[in-house]
Structures are given as structure tokens and as C-alpha cells.
Length: 442
Length: 178
Image (cartoon, rainbow over all chains, first blue to last red; front, side):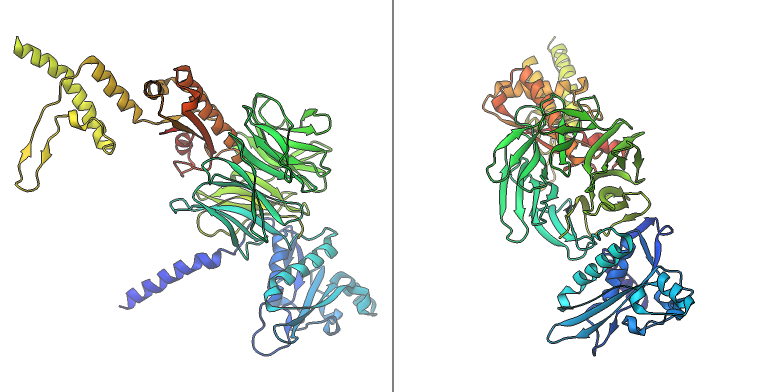
């Protein structure tokens, strides 16, 4: 009986761990290069337990950014301080971190909490302390307070991370963003699900479930709509769905392929792939009027167009040169230029938000990996070493790429920093996860 | 003399019986030839068993059976990043083409699929090209374009989930669906 009970307990444990593990990111490379930072648990000034540990959200955001490495809180010289007033610079003289985040949470009426936080420049504080004159105004980088509800704790944690990240790197944080992706549970009655979640995999919500494939979700520039391909009518059709009202609009349903939608920077049109005239070609559809304009004209495959940030050209995959490569088409003149020459294939490209580089899938020696090319120097760098990489999508601040890959025979999502230093596998639940798309700033 | 004829007839009939016996073990569900076979059956009640012999077939009937046999194969496979119909699958398509020409009211859906290498969007294009290559082949045999429709699922509906070279080979396919 005892043995049986043990086995049962183990079975329960095994069953319950995937749910917990579902939110754990696995960093596979790049921890060593990260910059040490101190994040102190926010001091709770109420009774009972606080709604959520807000510092944990900040800490995991900073880890996921690939740029920072929070120190173990047990090794910090001061504990349980929640404001700069309690900070003693001389105590921190030997701490090897560039900054300290600390704060407090105080009940502020029914389901309301006052959250305060301070960001301290530890290097400046240490220098001041050596000189003997310590004035908080010299080393306090930021200080804010706001009132939130219990439901807003994660969101405000991301907000703090955004502020800390921007203050320390000069780059806008992308922690208040979302991702959409497709989950497939083969064997179920409706195996295909279009999902949306916070960038870190929390707050996952289903937008659509279908017995037939769902593909290529992509965000509108205002972050309010998703365009995607659905086979629900036994053929490929492009839909635009409003995330708030759930209203779906069928945008394209020609004979043949209706695929690879990409919103124009102004959000008014979609670049798509249609094969209604024979071969797959790039078209632009006006979402409001449904008017279409043909952009490419070639007997080879042309597909998966994305927009240059200025909206004046498209980047697309074409096999007009024999094998799939990336080409740029100028929308005003229709002139086409080949952009990639390295490796056997290059496909699925997009331009980073700063317009300086291109992220795409490169095939070299039969291996498919995510690569980046500097548009000025034309230098190409393969960023990943995972298997069967596809569908790269760049974060709105250009620091990170989320993509689909294969791990232990299963499709999962992974992330790599655009400099290739930081690599991580993202949380997975049940089924195969694919076609990630990173939202704009929300 | 009569015995000789019977022997000759058996020489023809036996291989056919053998072929159908083999195939009926693997794909017994849609077995259209079952009635012509000399297959035995067991009666549960009394425990008796019956036996029989295969019917004698004319050359036309034999050909017909062969085509029916071939039509049970409704998947053809492709090389990596290629969409040409391989000669080894010509016989299968001939069988389907003959049937469709003889039955102009029958419609077929040709699904194109790709393996999981490359981007999903490119694979949709590749799958369509494979399905269209099959449609073109059938059209060349006289099948009306109105009898055929084409859909590409790219890499979205793999047959094999192993993501090995063997699995990829099974997924690069066109499927004829009636």
C-alpha cells in the first residue's frame, strides 16, 4: 500500500509538473555575457500576503532580455528595504552590479495598491561613497509610484522592467508586448488553435480553434488586429480579426493560395500571396475596399512578403534564381533587386524596426537556421544552432527574435537576441507550437 | 483436353488470387474484389467452413481489376523541393486518369503537401505546385479541368511526425481525394 501511495504521489507530481514547467524559460546560451543587476523583493506594507511578487516579474523580464543577470537576493548587503531613503551607499561598496531596483507595495483602498519603486545607479553611489559625500539625487536614476489593482500586478511589473531597461541601455523595453502563435494538437477533433499571450507566455488566450489548419498570424501596427490564414472552408483564406471585439473579416478568398499576410506600416493594407493567376505572386490588398494590386510577375514562386519600415518597398522570397532567395521590390517603380547570396537558400525575411538589418531563415549544408544580415555591410551572421528553424519574428525594439524550431521531435518556440549571444527555449504546453508573431509596442 | 483448359485457367487465376489475397490483408476495408475471390468463410454457429474458387476473368476484366487495385493507391510522393511526377507513380495516375475519363461526372480533389523543411509559406507554394503537377498529368490523359480541384496544405498536415529523412519523404506528397 505504501509503495502504491508513493507511486500515486509520483504520478500526481509528474502530471502536475508540466503545467508549472509550462512557464519556465530555458536559457541555453548567453548568461555569462549578461550584466549583473540587483533587484530587491518589494517590501509589503500591508497585512496578510501581497497579491503578487512584483519583483519576480521584473527579475524574470531582465533575465529574458538577455542583457541582465539579477544577483541572488540572499547575497545582497541590505535586505528588506523599500525606498532610496533606507539605502546605505557604503554598505554596497563591494557589490558588483551596475544598478539596484527596490520598491514597496501598500494597500490603498478596496483592491487598490500603491506601488513605489526606485532605480539606483550603484556605480555612482559607490563612487560618491568613496568621496564621502552621498546625496540620493546624484545616484537616483528614476523614482515612480502608481496605484494599481491586484489584476494589474504583472502588467505593472513589465512597466517597471521597461523603465529600468530603457534607463540602463538606452533602448526602449519590449516587456509590455504580446505574441501570437499557433498550437496544434494532432489527434484532437479541432487540432488547430490560434493563441495570444503576454510576451513571456503568461495570460495565454485562445482566439480561434479550428478542425483545419491555421497559419501565419501577424499583427496590425496598432496591435489591435491579427491577420491570419484559415483553411476552415477547406481552402486557404485570409481573415483579419479584431482582438477586442472578436469580429472577423474575410479579406481574401480567391481560388488557389491566399497566404502570407503582412500589414503595411499604416495598417490599411495587406501584402499577400495569391496564386489566382497561376503562380504564387505578391499582391497588395486594401483592407477596407478589398481592391487588389499585383506587385510581382514571374513564373517562379514569389511569396512571404514583408514591408520595409518606410512602406515603400517589400522584401519577399522568390525562387526566380533557381533556389529560394530574398528580393526587394520597390513599390513605385516595380524594380526588383536580389538581396541575399550567401548559403543555399534564404527565405522568410523581415527588416528590423531600425531599418538596419534583415532577419531571415538561412539554409546552409542542408540546415535551416535564423540569420541576420547587416544591410550596410552585407555581413551575414547565422544566429541559431537549433533544428528546422522557421517563422522568425522580431521584437518591436529590435533586440530579440522569436522563432519556431524543433526540440526533441516537437515544434516549440525559441528566442535569440539579434546579436546572437542570448539563446532560449520558450515555455511549451501541450501540442506543437509554431508560427510565432511578436506584437508591436502596446 | 478439358483438364488442360482448366489447368491453363488456373494458371491465370491463381496469381490474381494471390495478389488479391495479399492486398486484402493490408487494405481490406474497400475491397471491391472480395466477391470474385475464392475466399473461405467460417460460420460461427455450426463451426462449418465453406470453400470456393475464383471466377474466370476475361483480359478486359483483368485489366479493370488491376486499375481498381492501383486506384486504391491514392498518394504519390515527390523528391525534396521538386514537383515533377516520378515515373514510378505513373501507373497509379494512369489508373486514376482512366477512371476519371470514363466517369466525367466524378470529381477529385488533389491535395499538395510538403515536408517540414523551409518556411510554412514557401511550403504552401511548393505543395500547390505538386498538386498542380498531378492535375496537369491527369489533364494530359483527357481528364477535364472541371473534374479536378487543387488545395495545398504545405507542411501543415504531415503524415509522419518523426522529422527524420524517412518521415520527410512520406510528407512530400500529393493525395487524390474523391
